[in-house]
Length: 218
Image (cartoon, rainbow, N blue to C red; front, side):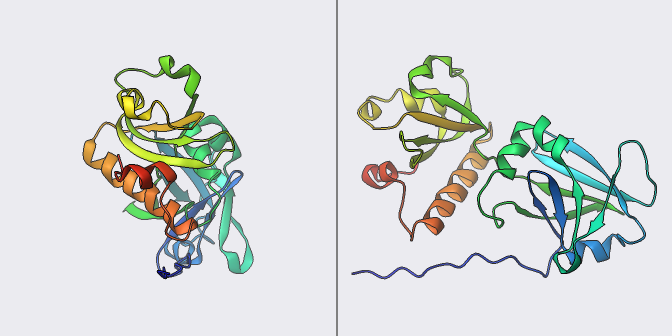
């Protein structure tokens, strides 16, 4: 029997970070100290959908578009974000990720009191296999196949419709296709590897079924 080390998921407390939840953003104490949140107790959000980025502009002024930043005691600080999450599918899918570690992002200071986070592509588009004709022919990115029970059986990258139409996949058992559009091939490879690693972390080092039996990861 081959032993595989179990990797414990840890949230670092040494770097400024923001956690995305369905109703709030949570700021760790490191970031709160850097932005002087007790003085700059309001935040305005900015979004860049193409880059999957959210910016946080902290200020001492309460404006029509700002949200108050409130203390959570030792857990850090938070601000409401329910409306932003519900209006942006790419954010909502991140907020629905099961692990806090997957929803935690390093905060980068672009300029004074203006911080950004880079979200992961979280398979925000969903299509039933029987509706594959609706897939745009030019759609490229990362994708995953799910069986009727909702279990992930494959994670891949590339032209999503072309991969799906490969003859060797006709007999594969899955019902649903989740995908994110990513044009850049190097980014496709990066995010495919990211999600395969996350799957393995949650499944004792095991690959999705068809990644394993096919011997390939794309």
